[in-house]
Length: 248
Image 1 (cartoon, helix red, strand yellow):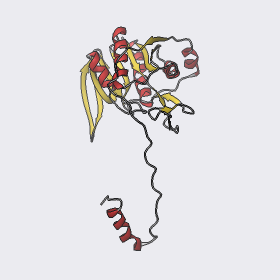
Image 2 (cartoon, one colour; image 1 turned 90 degrees about the vertical axis):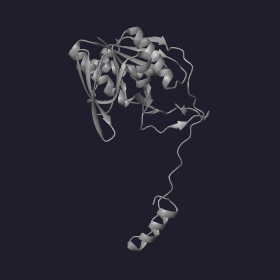
Image 3 (cartoon, one colour; image 1 turned 45 degrees about the vertical axis):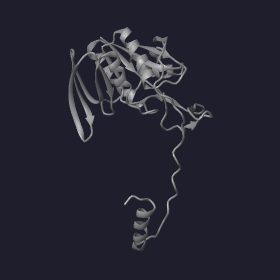
């Protein structure tokens, strides 16, 4: 069995992001990039299945040479090889999914893992689009997974609870926090990853369906006000909540 894991190279959520001069992209200077946190759950689940089923785990990422850093992290965790689908231009969700689906189809991977969303754009649709292009089953926001030959039993989060879904291979699974506890790369794994292959291929050409017109930071929060220190301030507080904040 071949298992694909799709990973994104994203800004660390602790990084202070600045908007570039063009007003449409972020300024990469001083930004720390990491493997998308949700993708770590995807990598871990693929590795668990590999250990039980003697599978091959292939890591895919769409982007620039910088994405090799993220691919190498997955290889250090235990993935077998990596593929960089190279494109120096920004892609929308459809463009990323199209590139991934074409390569996954060519490789013949039966099971595809990725995080439920990337923490940069938070669109949460690449997995679903990839599955649609491939013609695979798709189960999203998965928090528990069992694979029995061709059958998949997955527990997924829904509003107010969880549901259990049964499907068959081939399938795309998007991972949610709680699916597992991602392993740390060992020193042995880090050293071994340096010898593993990261193949470079041009990402499939596709016309974007969306365009970023502008980026802007949210408005700064207004400073807090102290109306009083005892019950005498209650009436004024209620008045401001009703007339100024308009929340009651």
